[in-house]
Length: 112
Length: 110
Image 1: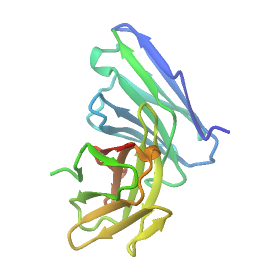
Image 2 (image 1 turned 90 degrees about the horizontal axis):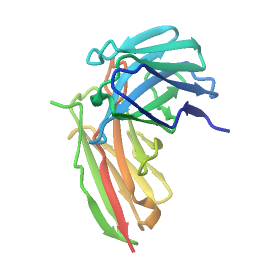
Image 3 (image 1 turned 60 degrees about the horizontal axis):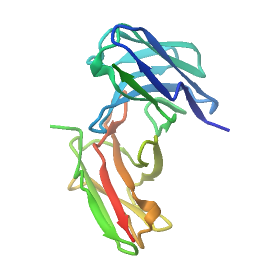
Image 4 (image 1 turned 180 degrees about the horizontal axis):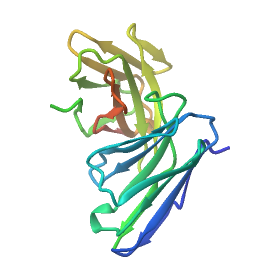
């Protein structure tokens, strides 16, 4: 019974490509998030999606776009991938906005 | 100034030792605090919330010091399986996300 799941687990792609990462939570939570963890292991919030309201971290390039078909899903689409996008991307969810969060297993993205 | 600051370590301790980590936060009005644990190549997992009165869960004790604006995590009788990175998390008032520290890496040595 995976609470927060992500696919794919690994993604290797070339610069310039467009890719998507999927996230699903079965916890009945109202809020979902996307984080980027770089090589220095720092977790950086990218997006919060709460009750159909999207909150974007202003430092995130507009090549990144989250899409939420329903409350249980928050997918991340990335256009024109760059080398610097290589990182681990974690999806997370929380019962209410800005509360303790539960993370998915991560997607390790490598851009070559 | 960063919202949350942690000593990155590494802390290398023998099995059975007691080890403590501190984490300082910048916004004195912050109300919610957590410790997360992240194993190598895994996702962060909630270890425990930090309550004003302090709280204990088995070998783990979390404390909050509002006057000095830090939270601490004490691990007693360290096990090999405690080896991980420990992340402190703070939610400042009015924030729209959690603020994670950079993590403190612990290695428990046989």
